[in-house]
Length: 466
Image (cartoon, rainbow, N blue to C red; front, side, top):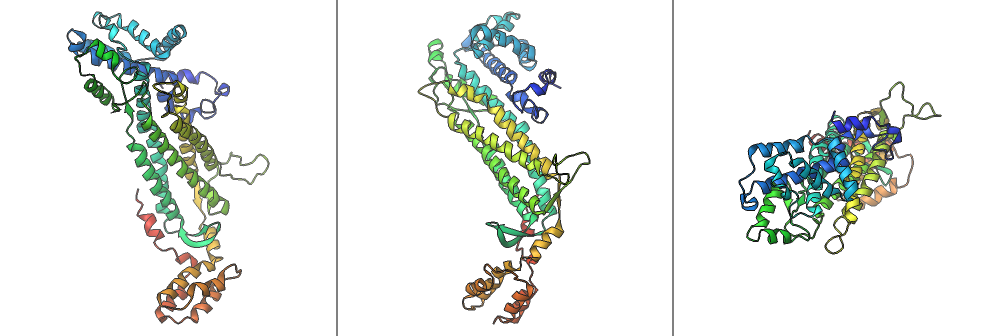
């Protein structure tokens, strides 16, 4: 267990202000290494050290030979072993300076004094940088790595489970309910496959977002850089540095990187979350209808007063957290690309909530996956509803009538079935028997039942793949 997680566990979660750090802390603990304040400081240290190394390994800038392999290794060790105690030392400096990034610079300079080679170049720490040069790269790395290492794998687990359900339930017929009314049958597997496809498309969009970064000074023009080293190609140098970190280089910025790609990322998360809200509500409804039952545990309680209850709490929990997440994600998406003139500070405090938005998203994925794992199909209940909905066969009957030129087929079936009760097999077979259509077609319609009228649903569900 990482040191910062061990220390966190020593604090009672009952005292936490946020449920992510209290009730749900174990479910979102993986995000702490990306979005805690310790993580932010650690990423700043990483960026500052990489910038120092890049400058220190360029003799045209330092006027000396490039940093030795030993010095580079020592710097790498400093970043790799950055501890909670180190972060606390940075915070003590911040208490004096009232500036979080300057505190990182001072802490790092102090660490470099023990090595003559790095001490001689200590003024190249944070050289020509504005705080946002360090912050935007840190935030970009936090978002990129958390997406790739935590969020996408968690989403993949949900998609995989849904794909399994789609295959298992591909042949289980189900009455559809368009507008809440009986409608053309489908299969439960096909309904799960619909969500698999949508989520896979959302995943592609999320994984494909390329996060931008910049390191071009106070207002994006390399002003200080060019005064110090007027003959140096800072644009090429900055691009190479940002791309080496694994981010996309943005050549045109104000003091801040404009956060457009961050907004794109948050929009992609929100779109996936909206799909999951839709899925949670549908499955909640299927549970309510009795199409799904939920596996129970002996000691669990569904209601404090009604002993029989097995509530769909996992899907409700998921939906609720998706709502909280999307409220934050959409604010991040709308606010971050907007800055007054060359800089205001409104983005700074907002960015500290990235982990909160993704924490609620991750919690929702976990609850959804847990709920999916409890589902048990009740084929008898599904068949019961289908057997009481013979009116849905008005669609195929009138469609075959259209094919063979029978006059007013829609209107005839409308008169027979619309708003009527007691429509059964006998009613429809009597109607079919009077039709002037080929005998083979008539026999096919006479054999038709609601459970057999599912089109390509089974095929589509099975073809969704793993």
